Image (cartoon, rainbow, N blue to C red; front, side, top):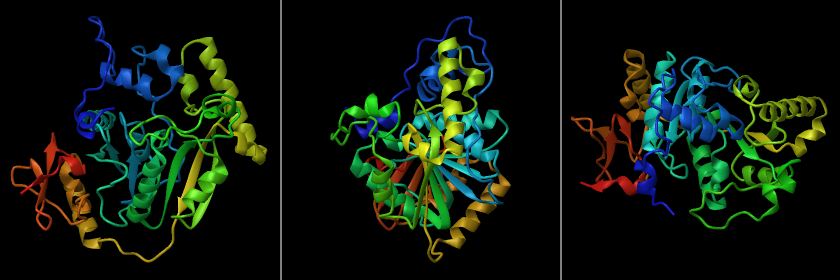
Length: 346
């Protein structure tokens, strides 16, 4: 098992870049698209001429609304959410993903903020985000990590905000006869996919949220998206995607079919009284308006994951300092590393 520190700083594994490679997409991103977008992309690695940016299936954002992407990877959902008028913020445990994601979003004419963070210790102040999104990430966590993550989502979610999260369905047509036949891995540090039924998800989510509903994401697979047919190579891949999308559309007409989708979206929200820091949010917006390319604009919205106290940026911009707790967190290439294990005592 990798330690947290090893995961933060490990380099993403890639095949050596071909000597004659002249693609528009950086080679390392081509490799990660193949790793994160599903097996039907494997034959497309090195051949993609444009970033396969999906449409994020959420309502369009209003002015100055913040979206958090948990497990932002190479940045596809950050760019997708910026196109829906959100100010996107991404977290990932790997520093290199945070760097690549910002690069991808910038190359496509937009801006996003990224922070290295553990999903069970989200380093943000209370009630910051209007929408929290995650795709094919939280499913890889132990049950206790899932619970900790949902508790944190509730805390940082704005009043009347909601989360929209993708999960595999244990009752799915494919899952129930394939990967979901085995029991969930009980090792805390394992990143195997875990499977639950819609009823189990409902019970889990209603411990934290006031509303719960789920809808079909995909049939016959847990990562197939509407736009994948454009980028997939090979008749077999195209056939699987086509059948999956037809069944998915059918489930939107015959509603009971969603119970057998292999991948589902869960939407959950909360009600309550506003309690976030309007002052901190105002400072962030001022900085964002002046220079949206500065990733450290995000500092006013962060908090120490150990103590919950606010942070200040050191004069040389290499550390975030929590004066009340006597701790400091590193900043690498303008990206805060907000993981408890990475703090140092002052």
